[in-house]
Image 1 (cartoon, rainbow, N blue to C red):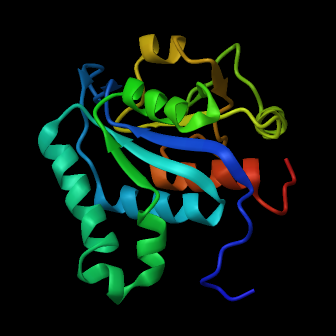
Image 2 (image 1 turned 90 degrees about the vertical axis):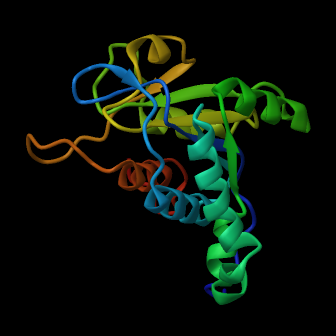
Length: 198
C-alpha cells in the first residue's frame, strides 16, 4: 500500500469533536479557549490515519471559528492544497461548529441516527468505561461521538450529561498533562489501531 493511500474505512461510525467550551481555565473559571493550529493539523492527521468519519472543532466565539475556517481553507482550497495534498486529505475531515448540538444535529441528519456521546477526561470517574469496552461498542454500527476538552478540561456539568466517560490515559509517573493532540492520537490508536494490546 502506498503511503498516501488510505485503507478501507474502519470507523465510519466514529466522529470526534474538540470542545473549546465549556472548559475550565487554570483558576477553575468556565471559559471558551483559543483554537490552536497545531491541534487542528495533528488531530486531523490522526483522525484520517484511523479512518474517523469527521472531526469537528466546536467554539461559540465567532473570531475563533473564522480562524479555524481560514486554516482549513488554506489547506483544502488554497495554496496548501497543492503544496501538500496529504494535509489537504486530512484537513478535509474538519468541520467548524458553534455548539455540540450543531455537531449532533449534523451527524443525525446524515442518516446515521443520533450519536452516542463519549467524554474523554484526564481525571478518573467512578462510572467510566475502558478502551476494550468502547472498542467493542463502536463495532455495533451505531454512530459515536468522542469529545475532547481543551484548556484545563471540560466542565463537570458538561461531563455529567455525556452518555459515557472513557477511562483516562495513565502515564508512568505523577505528571499528567498531555496535550490534547497527543491524547487524541493515543486514544484513537487504543480504540482503532491495528495492533491493539489493551
